[in-house]
Length: 377
Image (cartoon, rainbow, N blue to C red; front, side, top):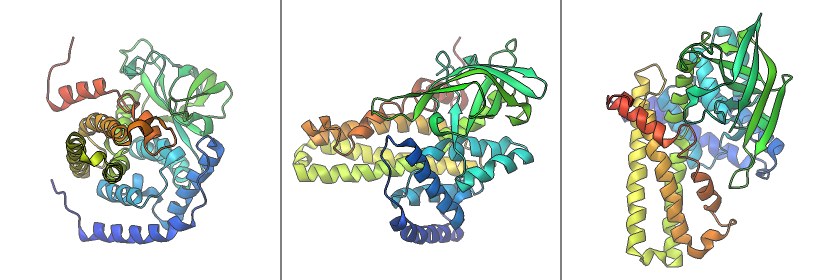
């Protein structure tokens, strides 16, 4: 394992840092959080700038180390987050790059990279969240199409998406992990109803999606029929292994800001709070080293993150919640003011032990696939 950077990687970092210094001051103002068409346009506009500068494909056509450097530097510089492009760039795109046919890569990857199309994630269902393989959305083969009926929930960015990475059951008689297929579904197909869901923080980046006899071409299936669970594990390895990298950098920045605020408002005199912030500093430094370890491992395995991503996701989810609980301690009574910094982040942090696989599921993965413990019966 090598956690150092090569001269070529450091040259990439310096070049990227210089470009960010020129590009960021020219960005337009950010739209309101409730203006999803505006947010889509803003996020895709940033992606187009990355494309024109030659950085768009770093999420899947670069080494894991280059990807790590990119995420670290863009977050440090305060560059826009991928936003509406999250699923396409960090989930669906890497999966298609790893598992798709040449024709599928040619159709779907360039529009994602150019900032032309948005993807959403149609995985979870009302009765298949943590136990994702229990999904019941059916896809019946009819000639060159699948006819899909069912519903999805917590569908990220469905209200502004062009495509959906969709898990469906193509063989209801097979064991539940073996009868699933991974489809790319056009969101303008007849029979799709999208109902936005408002979160505790007041945003609506999720939706319920209802599917009534929606026709999806068989050519849109990524991987073999009934092999979708394996393909899904590739998707989730990206989601848990590298998708949160930029957020670790952001949390380290927030931690420094919290220490500064505590010094200003007098809370720094509390030794318990100082110890708490110091422990969190150690926690996020360790998470950054774990990220580097996971990336180093991915370099040796063809670029797909391994099960170490589950260990990272498990600890990061709880560390993020602890960070924003500490923010409430620093702010004191002001932590009830939704207009203060970090308060909406604190509300959203509550979802992190559920999103991208619950902490209970991550513990099972760590126990079974890393520690080699037997499965429960």
